[in-house]
Image (cartoon, rainbow, N blue to C red):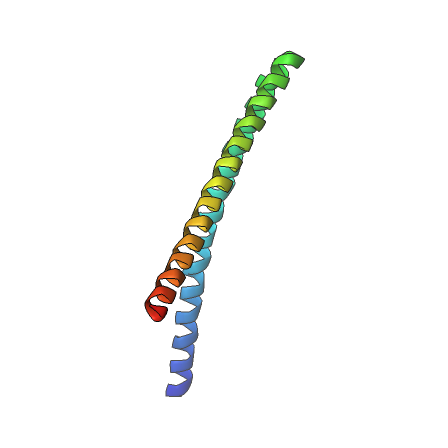
Length: 104
C-alpha cells in the first residue's frame, strides 16, 4: 500500500513538473506569436511605403539595399581572409624559427 502511495506521489510530481513546463512553453509561444505579428505589421507597412514609390525610386532603394549587403559581405570576407593570413603567417614564422633553432 505504501508503495502504491509513493508511486502515485511520484506520478503527481511528474505531472506537476510537466504542467509547469507546458505553461512555460505556452508563454514562450505567445511571445513568439506576438513578435511575429509585430514583424508582419512592420513588413506590411514597408510594403505600403514601397507601393507609393515610383519605379525608379523603388529601384534606387533596392540598389541601395543590395549595395549595403554586398559591402557587408565583402567586409566580412576581407576580415576572414586577414585572419586566415595572420594564422598562416604565424604558423610559418614558428616553423622558420624552429628550423633556425634546430639547424642553427
